[in-house]
Image (cartoon, rainbow, N blue to C red; front, side, top):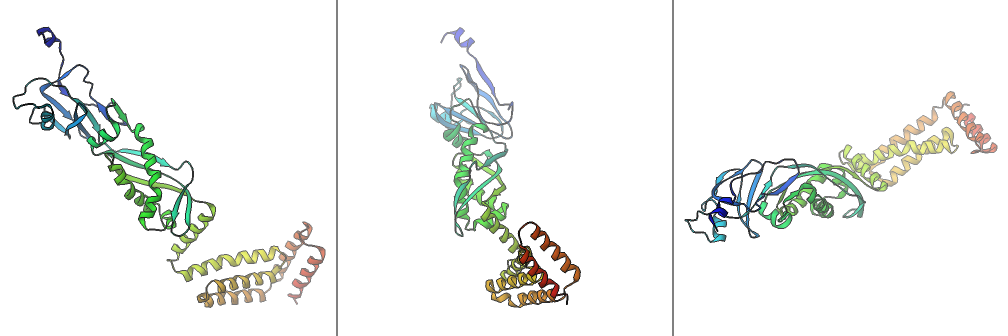
Amino acid sequence: MGLMDFIKKQFIDVIQWTEASDGTLAWRYPMQDMEIQNGAVLVVRESQMALFVNEGKVADAFGPGTYKLTTQTLPLLTNLKNWDKLFDSPFKSDVYFFSTRQQIDQKWGTPQPITIRDSDFGAVRLRAFGNYSFRVATPALFHTEISGTRETYSVEDVDGQLRGLVLQNISNAIAASGVAFLDLAANQLSFAQALTKQLAPEFEKIGLKLEGMTVQSVSLPEELQKVLDQKIGMGMVGGDMGKFMQYQTAQAIPKFAEGAAGGGGGIAGDAMGLGAGVALGQVLAQNLQAGLQTASAAAVQAAAGVKPEDVMATLEKLADLKGKGILTQEEFDAKKAELLKKLV
């Protein structure tokens, strides 16, 4: 190389990266025809790491700090280039910077319901969404597995891959947790923890660290949602099955009574509804007999203490049903006579 060529040749004295915007994970220093001066300075800022790559082979990595580039600070690159200790010439090498800051509020979700296996129900179809955060933890691995030789690699570029990992591992996360799905769905924090435990090793395989994950919503089929609501109700009574059955019976009694009244049973129907509710409770749980007998006694007492205003209100309802064609004249007259007898 002639003297003029040597003079025209450009040398790099300082290598650094000032991030112009958020969302960049990897950035290749623009070498072009330039060479790195022996003794040049490498500046790696907080939340950054730098990686030297020689002819496709990963060499030395640097964390935050300021470094003078010599054979002592570049041992792997020195070995790759077969430099001796007296090396003092400029050299060429690709230098990649990586942002190690947390990339927060990354969204994940199920565009369509997905089917997962469950010990209680066999299979469950659900939709869920939330967010997560991650960072580049192992630049050499991320470079070889994901970003490669591209000039820049952004969060947007890896977004689809990470969303796919989340969806792929939801079922495995639930299975590995050993917890029934309904218990996880009722506690979104536990659901998020199960997902994090399953996904963390998958992120590590591509040089990333999963810093956090949230489950903001879980949507279930209507039938399964009712079961979930019942399990939440059990939690409200401390998981005691006896108390839960009492709660269920108490909820059922007004419905029986309302149905009986709507069907033309009047106050007598109210009593029948209460009795049906008690009978249902006795069939479901014999150990609730004492509590249900109390409810039955209350129903009998309520039926015995008939008030004229109650009878008139019931008659008005029956008349309305007759006017709408729900009751025939004969049915109305029969119920009317039955109610009036209770005032005697």
